[in-house]
Each structure stands twice: as structure tokens, then as C-alpha cells.
Amino acid sequence: MENRKHCLITGGSRGIGAATAYRFAQAGYKGTFFYRSDDESAQYTKQRIQKITGSRQILRRGNHGFP
Image (tube, rainbow, N blue to C red; front, side, top):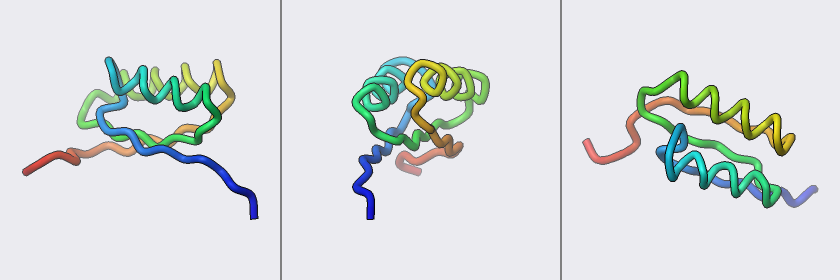
């Protein structure tokens, strides 16, 4: 079995979350990042990371904070 690194990031569509997702991808992590509502920014971030690092990223939309 292959040992792969994976990270989960909340708020990953823009700002600090997007920068964090990018840095983990540069370090070789596969990423899943969650975002609340900004579909356009999330898709942009995902495509940017995949283009630059070749790392597969997974998006999950939803509010994962406190109700």
C-alpha cells in the first residue's frame, strides 16, 4: 500500500485558505478543501493548484462551521 499525504482545509476557496491549500499541494499533499458558497473562486483555486503543481484537489461545498 502506498503512503500518501492528504490534507483537509476549510475556507479554501480564497484568501488564507486558498494559500494554505496551494502550499500543501506544493509539499506533495493531495487536498480536499471545503468552501461555503463562492463556486467561482473555488473552481479557480482548484484549477490553479492542479495546473501549477499537478496535484489532484477535491472540492466540497457546504458550511462546516458552527450552526
